[in-house]
Image 1 (cartoon, rainbow, N blue to C red):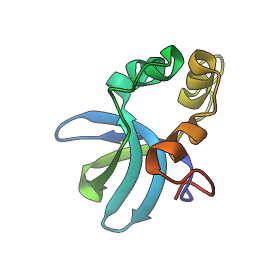
Image 2 (cartoon, one colour):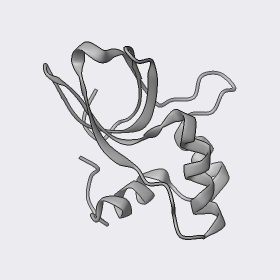
Image 3 (cartoon, helix red, strand yellow):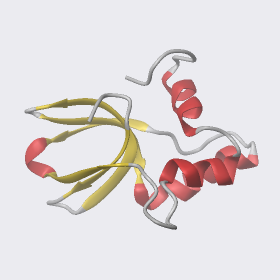
Image 4 (cartoon, rainbow, N blue to C red):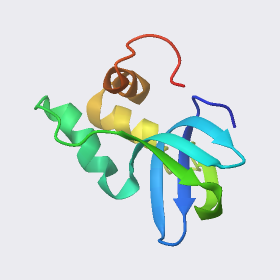
Length: 110
């Protein structure tokens, strides 16, 4: 996977799931800018409502020994990808929102 790819990261010890944009992948671990899957819908809804965001994406590093698996955020049959769900709820591309949150309005999400 390349930097800038939207991914789902499954972790163990403790068991957690994160969604976001892949910032770096190295033998030491994975760096992702995103949110815990458990709060994804709440995070997305705040952009749809137009209110001041209370939840924000974070840049997180996960040591490789905690990473159980990592998937590209993609549709599986009739199940929408997270970025598709965001678009359905908000009407905006999630990549644009993540760029604005990082303070880099243009260019790749790396």
